[in-house]
Length: 263
Image (tube, rainbow, N blue to C red):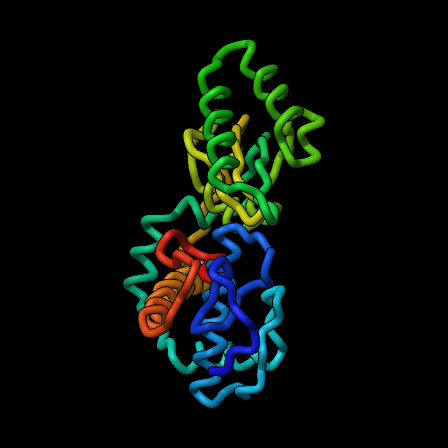
């Protein structure tokens, strides 16, 4: 693998290929995403699916040929079996609430946005302190305290309205956010931070309207897709782990957390 970038000690790299330009400050999540993409790009070259002349950009954006080659590489390397009828029924029985139609929740939140250059550890500390603060106040003052925190701390325009998001369905939200909110029974300030592509959320569920649970036969396709997606994520994580184990990865902790690539 050629190295077209003169590396400095502070620059993260995979097999000598820089993941960012000198002086750039990326959060851990972005670094892990770029490292995983670069591992797959290099694997595609090794497999003869991508020209060795392909060079990643300093901003981490892959070329169109690289994206196509990685898609083909993953298709070749990951064998995802079709889930059995029995497995689908077990999953449906354990997650019936997830397969309902019409479920709604009235929400408000305080968003701590993860942006380029932000100190994620400090951001998490502020978010956790805010979560503790709003959970410690029950009764008639709780709404005012939440609204004040939202207006002063939230990076979402809803902060001006006390963090109010109104009535939402799962389809109205980012999938990773929806998974934490819907198909549950909790009402009140959730006891955990909710993670999404936008950042960290302190969320309060004000009201819920349960949906109508659909019959297994009506959602069989969705159940099978959910199981295949779960198998895909597991297989891709294992494949990336093998690639990382055989590579020289500098300045990136690939074991710290899931990457957006795996979401």
